[in-house]
Amino acid sequence: MQLLFSVLILALVFPALFLPVDLQAQSAPLPPGTSAPDQPTIQAQASPLAQPEAAIDAKNYDKARGLLDAYLSTNPGDARALFDRGYCDDAQGKTQTAENYYRRAIVADPKLFEARLALGLLLAQAGSEEAQTQIEMAVTLEPNPPSPAAKAQAYRTLAKLVRESDPDAAKQALLEALKLSPETASDTLLTAEIAEAEGDKDIAEQAYRRVLKVDPQSSAATAGLVHLLMEEKRYSDAEPLLKAALTRDPDDPALNTQYAALLGAEGKMDEAVAALEKLHRLQPQDRSIGVMLADAYMQTENYEKADSVYADLLVSAPNDAALASARGVVLIREQKYAQALELFQRAVKIKQDDSDAWGGIALAASNTHQYSLVVEALTMRSKLASETPATYFLWATAYDNLHQKKQSVEYYQLFLKSALGKFPDEEWQAKQRLAILEK
Image 1: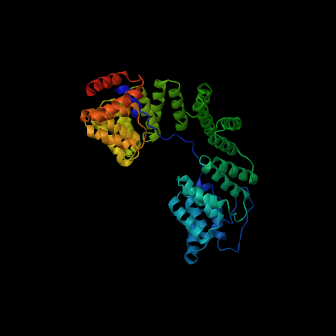
Image 2: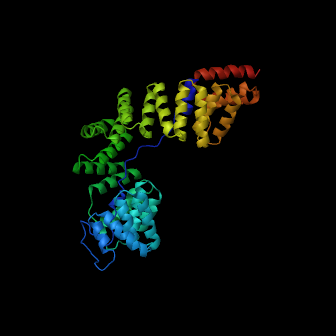
Image 3: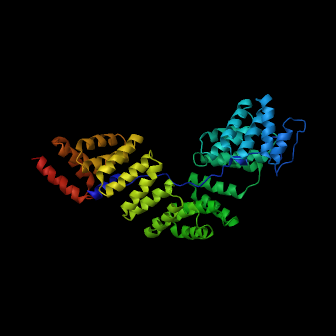
């Protein structure tokens, strides 16, 4: 039965690794009235904010904070002062209070470009979906004082945020940015990522290679190009790129992860396991690395080690349905059916529409002779996914053991029609049972 049911539950899907997006909140424009390297100093000496903004310009954030607090005590609705105050906290890593001040600035003046952009950058850094909304608002507004560089930054940020969900919008945003400031290597890299998201692999490859021609040590461009080459199964082209990058930066997690994936794709599983074990030692709580290592252990039939990795990951993420289900698969391979059943049941409590976990429950329940539970689990699974030879066989044997002759005959017949000689042991069993049941 092992061959048959490996088809049912071993195809678990985990999130892919993505290239990091450089969306740093503190790359937001300086507050109005302060200077930046690429724009002239504009000092409004008559403004009550001249002194605190001069302190911000000098990176004396504690002094600026004190002056701004005093001013805001009597002018709590001054949008510019609220933005300045948030900028001080943002510069010193106090992101929660910075966010609060930026939001207050937007309430006071919804058209304040600087606050919209700064809040959007802060939210993007935290992975919040609201970041896109704030940046989309920012690109409709104008900086004060005028700053083409700041407006271009807003467009570039928008392009990065939507490059996968809406590549056309990302392309347009990048074009708007290039109207305001010169093209950079980062723009070429972003062009490659947008092209890849659109499925234009030739353009993406050309752009990645242009970046590497200018900056041969660009880890992001190397990772992007390697990812593209691996998708096309051009492993011999990808391997020298990765090895050269790892020579420069042997402990880079993204590069090592790609190298392990490349080795696995080439069938060099022992080397892949060694590479992943090194990564796992460096980052024991990283879910993606742990999942890759456990999968490599599964492929080399080292189920005990795979189980240990999943058990450790579940300690820090007990409500991760995919991890629970994945560990259940390992336990099935170890023939620890009762423990596997508990994990699959945990998974469906967290994520009720997990068809693989419902299939796992059916398989584990069948092996622990809980045939009513098999029928219950398969009924739930049938609402989410199509039947397979494995599920037909589970239906048949469950009904057979529950002495429901009509249903068992029906499912044995459906199994034989779909199996097509791929599962000889189970097909022999089905034929034997039909010969008895149809007498």
